[in-house]
Length: 222
Picture 1 (cartoon, rainbow, N blue to C red):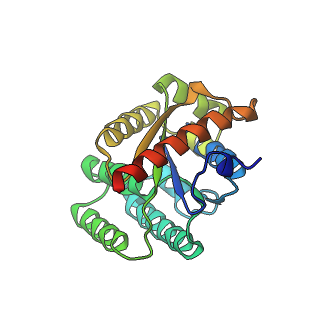
Picture 2 (cartoon, helix red, strand yellow):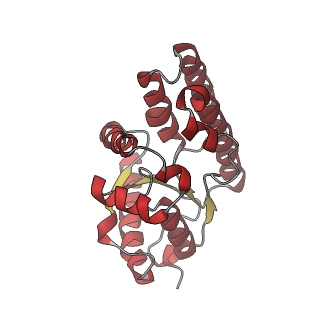
């Protein structure tokens, strides 16, 4: 049985999966899309022309990388709008501006002028009718040790070459960001509370929680 119908989740819902590198956003995106009969919206990492360059030289490529991500995510937002919803989204556009661009500005790897240009573009994009806000953001969380172990197991060369201190800082920034995020409802989910790879049935309790969150927020809007 389609779990979307079982738990009465709107067919036009937009659910975004957020969390630091290594928490399993892509796995969760696929599992929820299959369970609900929704489309997916993925971050295009493998075809990103700046990502390898960025990991080799943060100062030189941070602005280029963030502008690329911003453009790609806005195209995805427009696609979601045109389909009328019914999407699970891997990573949110809010993470780009609230974590990554801000981090590079604060660390000096993005100039003040570049940062202001980036923020102006973001603000212009979110004000357009092609930018549907999520009905729910699912924040995947775990300990820093859990995250580092998952990054190690994944084995991506550019991630393995990145200092552990970078992942530790990213983890802290994500925690600070989610504690003040209010652009849409947030549901926190600990990565140790389910195993979507070895136990496909563990997705149903997650869907049940999603349905409850969406119903609660719909009641508050009335």
